[in-house]
Image (cartoon, rainbow, N blue to C red; front, side, top):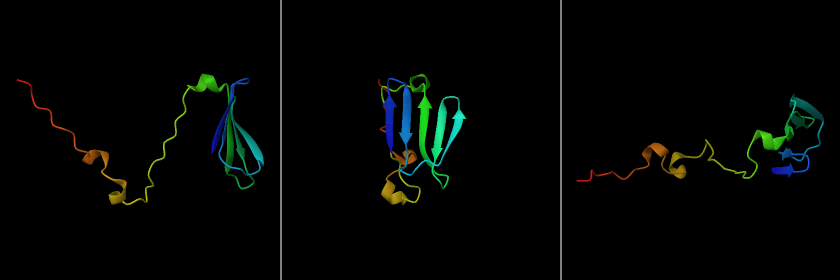
Length: 89
C-alpha cells in the first residue's frame, strides 16, 4: 500500500493494489474509487485532501490478527495491572 500526496492539486492517492483499473466510481464529489476487473478496490483518490484531514502526519498501526492465540498476544488491556496509589498523609 502506498499513499501519495500531490501538493500542487491537493490530492491524496491511496494505492491499495497493483491491478489494472477496470472501473472508476465516484463516491462523492471529492472521492473516487478505482476497481479491478474482479471488483476489488485498487485505489482511492481524495480531492481537496487537506480540507478533509491533517496531512502533516500520517500514521500506520498494524493490529494483531483475530486468529492469534490469546497467549501469543500478551495481556489484554483489562488484565494489565496498574500500580495502586496510596493516599498521602
